[in-house]
Image (spheres, rainbow, N blue to C red):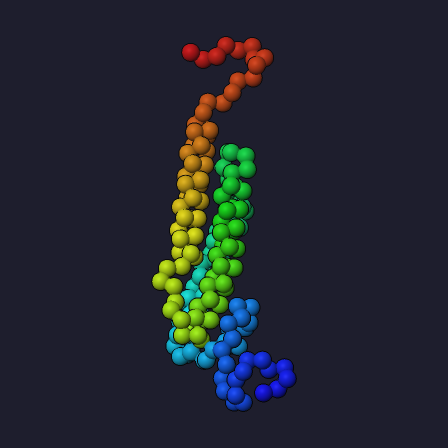
Length: 155
């Protein structure tokens, strides 16, 4: 054992480290590649979802025209923010799963990502629906007459 090695392992003996900040490749033993690839595919699927949310937010900011001031931002910003959060959370989930695979620990049955995405989209859909109703109500309202108009209002 070298002076810098404090693990107590014999030379050539594999050691497990439980350092959460360590690279997943530095932990435990190499998992079955099928499980590691499945974990990576799931990570990539979450990132495709995140990218789609960011793209939808950018499209809403660029093309959505509502009569309510700032309505585009009320639709666009939550989509972009949710996409950003999903992207970071998917990396954290991938890393946690990779650690668990390498240390032969059970994987979580449910993740926070699914709930976050579900509730986030439901909230954004509710806000968008409310804005659409307000926009319809505003566009159907009769135009306001000027206060100094000399012509009588139609009866």
